[in-house]
Length: 155
Image 1: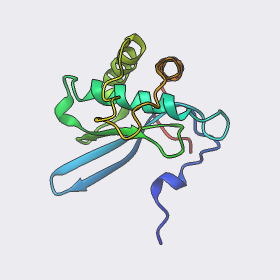
Image 2 (image 1 turned 120 degrees about the vertical axis):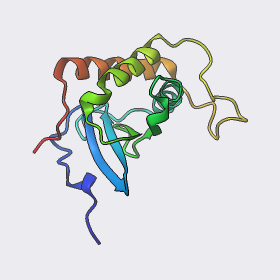
Image 3 (image 1 turned 45 degrees about the horizontal axis):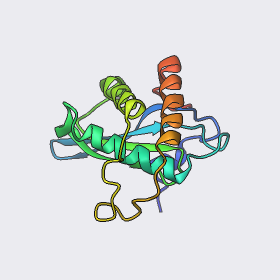
Image 4 (image 1 turned 45 degrees about the vertical axis):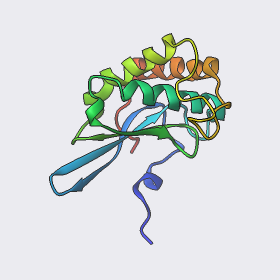
């Protein structure tokens, strides 16, 4: 079996950032997957499940209502809980989506009130949410992203 591309990235050197994880082509259609790496893998604690769940709900809500909503395919957490994937139509680079990702962070940081989609009829695990911790991780991620602008996986 072929080794998938994401397993070839040295996670011991990977730091928080915004990376192109992959580009997929089908005919004229290109889909770009971004790795929003929020914590440093294997060196920092992973994001706790309630906070990651809240990030997922708020980020997906923001992105699907943003000016570029027609380009959004998917937003969701990584299984390792060190970040999230953003999948978009187009042959894109991190610089193409940086402003939108920073706006998404600001939306989460400003958010108050009931978490969208966090009712039993809307979500399979509606009660596992933590807005304060979601804001903690997103604040830390935004600071890292704006200070260091990491867009290229370590060699």
